[in-house]
Image 1 (tube, one colour):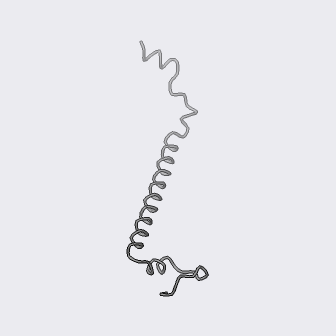
Image 2 (cartoon, helix red, strand yellow):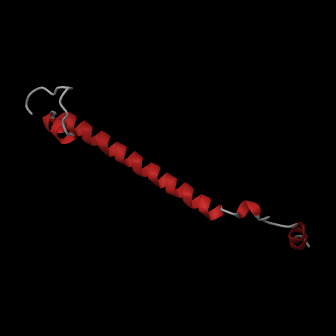
Length: 75
């Protein structure tokens, strides 16, 4: 694929990167690493939110304390 890359021909990412000079390959690596890290952070955020939602599911229907509980605590 030493010829100029044409927008008409589909190339794989590997083929495109192979044709890049070394400093551009480093930039592609850095950007791909950034995107992967961002994706993993987003996935962790989604799991944490899901976990929190599951932990408090049903609590909104239950009163945490009744008036009798509060009176007993402050006697």
